Image 1 (spheres, rainbow, N blue to C red):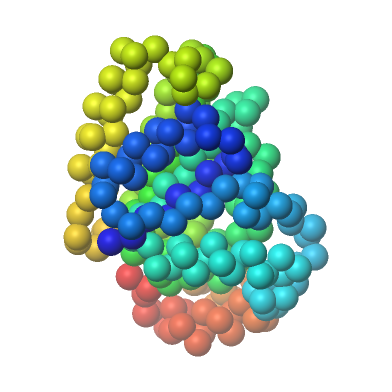
Image 2 (cartoon, rainbow, N blue to C red):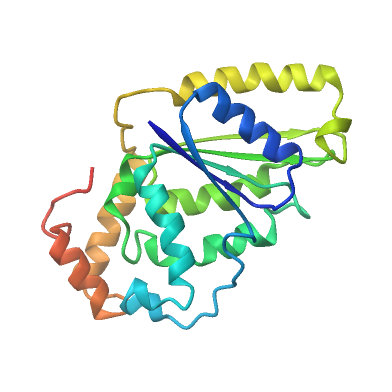
Length: 228
């Protein structure tokens, strides 16, 4: 089994270390990407990807990450809490993936993945930062998503108190157990409902482009076939 880690920061702070700790406990082959180092672009709203994903101006970098994600079993997204949101680099990456939402042209392999979103802050709640990433994961069709947020009350990992690190270690052990499973994750009712609604929308031709309806028809999803 394989892991893809996508870090919403270049520096190796508390969020990075917690993600690494989880990956270590999962004991799987890992591939890591750092943002913005490995994807230093903003979506420019050109809509080229709607017609053809390879026409994205940043396709060469995007494809490297996508190929790794397709081969992985588990995604680990890490982002510090920046003003009650994920980092700008993480948000930019998610924006560049918008064409893979169920409302457009989802990747069928997304429906067999597991994911976890990790965020830390000095003291504020991490819920809003985590929610942004989880929304994209749901939109892509990822059926199994866990999250972990914690206020580390420190500026860097070295300043985190020992008792806090002990708690994090225990939490990561529990989270690793939840993620470690050879069985294919079950697609939930909410995703099934959303997929069906999107199928009806595409059947009616309410697409951003006719290419989207053609994509769904070629997959057989409009006529009842499912990617799970």
